[in-house]
Length: 558
Image (tube, helix red, strand yellow):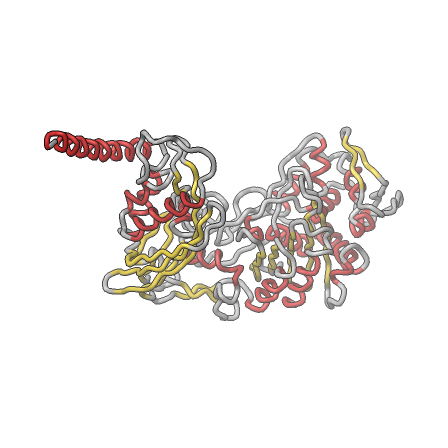
């Protein structure tokens, strides 16, 4: 009997040893294969399928949270479906980010998704600050083993983290800045939310030049090591700026003067909130200074400066300039508006309800925004497939990738196009891409005849070169300005511009986007020495949404 007991005990010990060895081997193999590797059943267990049940969700998330709280990065990573990617970030959480005393409180699961709250302490060189935030994770079935595992995303660790980002606590790479407007008003992201990404980018680019001293911070270090764009402010090298989560010791801010107007910015912030997915930019035509930038978007994207979408009929400002500059017609010259126009087998129409006018002048067709008039004229000699591109680049400074605004921006694209796109480009569809910054600049060039590249920070601060273009002949500019005046007082822009005094002008636009039931709303206009342009995705006709936004900004800037 004793012998039998001895055998059983030895067998039991042997079994435990094999189980432990098997567990270790399982960890290594499953981590490499991207299928987790944490505790649970052994490799010989029956492989399960289908979504994890409630008990599995609770167990998988609970074991992950417990290891994370203890700072056991490798073990916590083994409870995910991508241990190789999870381990470095979880390790940095405690080591590079100096985050300790972690307490995680899970909320009620919704299916396989578990929301949770994190409370912790960030400490560095005798300084400590609390850290608190919310995030969530999802539990999935491991593809290789069938185990319930945390679906790994960097946002599990912090909701603002993206692939390749990490957390670091230490002396800030750049000193803080106190960005001020043209009148000396301090501009903060709390008061002007749209400026948040711009202020972060300005700090990264100009923090050293502004003359401050860095503080100590917990920061999200972005994957590409971006400083908010290339040195000249072009789109090349663009990326999100590093983001500060906790300040342990404040630095001494340097003062950075911008071209922004606190009053115009406040009006722009308020105006875009009236319509979802809206953006607006205001500039001073006499100098190129940007007065306001505002976005109201769910995705946080700076569409005002970086958007790349079709501008609809606001593009007719450039097309009209091309027609005048090439001698095709003039403001009072012929521009018939038939019901349809066919270009290389594609038929173009006007807005529903527009009466045809075979005797229309260019001014008539411009103020009513007649598509067919412009389509018919782009076939006239001496125009070619590249004429619109040349007009945009040489006269309006667009599409050459050389704007140096001081932050990341896109300076438009008007590619030379053959086939149906040659006609579509002329009315702001086809392959043309713009954003409100570009169209505000177009209006500024149209009414002054001079291209002045928009900028938010004086080039004298860092010696960067602003883009140049030859601008418009005086006669072309005077005709464009007068046609925009007529559009604002008698044409499609009149309802939105109603009540604005002074010298005013505008152009409406609506851009059709594949898959959207409603067109994008575009509007650009001027009042005195302020030009503004706005875009609202799926906002309808130009005057429906974008028009009131521009009018509000022009009213504040007047």
